[in-house]
Length: 446
Ligand SMILES: *Cc1c(COP(=O)(O)O)cnc(C)c1O
Image (cartoon, rainbow, N blue to C red):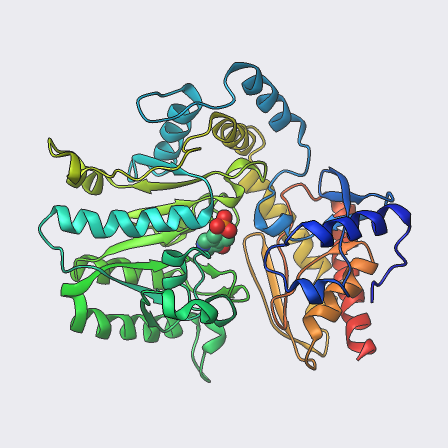
C-alpha cells in the first residue's frame, strides 16, 4: 500500500515507470505495492517530487551526493566543459580534465598512488583492480598468484568479478555457479566484541585469521580486498583503524597486494579524504567512485603505485594493461570531480564536517537512548544503529520515514544516515527528530 495517497502526477509517473523501467536492486512485483518517489528536481539536500512534496536525501542518493543536488559550482563547471569537450576517447588522446584529476588525486596520496586508471561504475573499478593485481604478479613471473581474499559480509559491486569478492548472500547466491569465489575471512566488525574486548581486540582476532590463511596459501594469493573502516553494504559495520595497519603488514610479509575499496568510504565520508589515511597506510591499489563527481556522473577510477605500474611498462604489448571502457576518462565526469575537489579545498569541508557531525551527534542523543536502539555508532559522516524489532522492520521504517519527508533505506535492521555535506543546523535538528519519530512510528505499526 502506498503510504501517501498518490495524487495525479505521482501516480501517473509511477505507473509509467513500473510499466517500462526495470528498477535496480528491486523485486518489481514487490515494488508494485510500495511507494515510489517520482522526482521532479533537487535543491541542496532535498529531493522534490512531481507534486511538490520535499524529501530530505538522508543517504545522499545511495552515498554519492556530497554537496547537494543541482550544486551551482558543479553545474557551472559542467556547463563550461559541455561547451568545450563533452567526450573523446582516452586511448591515443588526452585532455585537461583527465590529466588534472589524476595529478590532484596523486597529490592527495602524497604521490604514494601516482597512476590513475579511469572507468565508469564502482564495480568496473573493482574488476580493474583485481585484473591489475593478477596481471602484475604474472608480469613478475608469479602466475600462480590468482586467488583473492575478501572479508565476511564485504561488498564490492555486482558484476561477476566483483561478486566473486562479495559476501552478501542476497546479491551473490543466485549467481554462485558463475563465480570464482574468493577466500572469505573474518570481518573486524567491532560489534563482534566478546565481553571485555574492545574494537582493537576484535581487529587482532580478525587479522589472526587472515594471517593463518596467508600463511597457508600466499603462493596462490594475489590480493586482499577490503572496505577500510566501514563495510557499508554489510549494514555500516565499523572497525578499528588498527585493522588496516595489520592487514598492510601481513600483505607486505606474504607478498599480496592490498586493494582498498574506497568507493563508498572515500571522498571525506569517514572524516579524512581517504579512509586509509586514518591508519597511516596506503594500499597498493585504491578504488574510488560514488562521491568523486559529487554525485553527478558515473566515474570510477583505480589509483595504483608506481611499483605496480612499472610491472606493465614494457616493449611487449601483452604485458600492458589493455583494459578499456568506451567512456574511460569522460571529460564531463572528470570535470565534475575537479569541481568537487575545488569545493573540498575552498570550503575546508573536512573541518566543517567535524563541526556538523558534533552537532548531529548532540541532536541524536535522544535516539541513542531509545529502548530499541542497539550499537549506535558513527565514523565521520556515517551514523548507524541497529533496531530490535520484528521481521519487516526495514520496510516499515523506510515507509514511515518517507511519510515524514525523509528518504532513508535501512539495511535489514540497521538504520543509517549518510547525509550530504551541506546540512545546516536547522536541517540537522529536523533530521535527528524525524529519524527518531519514524522509529516510533515503525515500532508502533507492528
Ligand atoms: C557501491 C560500491 C561498489 C560498486 O559501485 P557501483 O557504482 O554500484 O558499481 C563497490 N564497492 C563498494 C565498497 C561500494 O560501496
